Length: 324
View 1: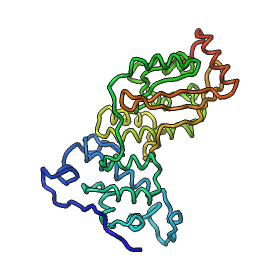
View 2 (view 1 turned 90 degrees about the horizontal axis):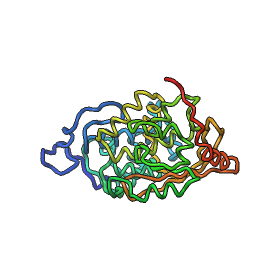
View 3 (view 1 turned 30 degrees about the horizontal axis):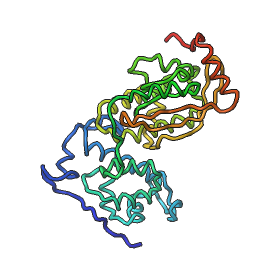
View 4 (view 1 turned 90 degrees about the vertical axis):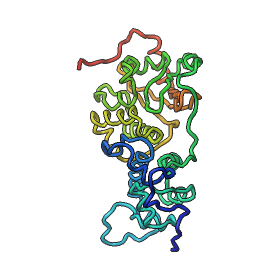
């Protein structure tokens, strides 16, 4: 197979003041704080995330997946770097430097070729662009706070439970049906009023999510996609670091570098007073603030609808709680 060089070139000896993507930028920021986390802002942090992301995607593809022989004495899971470079039509040295997080410039055409070779889905493709610093993904715009009518919309959605989360899964607003379905969540102080924090730190007896094996990895992958837009921001890196420290399960999922987009899916919840409630969640982006989305939980089946209605009709029923 013929290997062609991309229209991007390594920058081995750039000097301070050169354009973005040069070696001078690699000196900025702080050292790594942990796997997949960088406290330094800007290009250096992006390159570290990009390197880890490319490795994780390469290692999940087998030679058989792309029509290559398995070979002997293969020491790495998945494809080798030179195999990715060959299949994408880029130089081996250049791709190696990209995966090592070196400061090189990259074109849209090269990213598309790598994306196709690594079989990235749409969320992963967008994540790759953000980490490479290529402005091919439109950032969400808008103001800082919720629009005044947002709470009105939430209230009118009752008896459907509905809430607004930001990109980090902080709970920003909710309606009465959501409060009855997730009473522990809405009574938390702002610092821990976060869906991921509550789900990964809850006792097994009190965790409301029944289909955890499907739901939690999807939520972590959605968080990882948002993290790519906030590299180096203390609020994001600090949140991931704290949750990783208290939840080995979260740390393991975070280390996979999986990314996903918010979407509609089945969610099963267990409520201490009424039992199992089946819902379909629908996520809708809001114009303001940036990355905020409204999630509506539509009960599936008569039993689930009746149980939500019963909770709304009996606000005096307390949530289960434990003395810690």
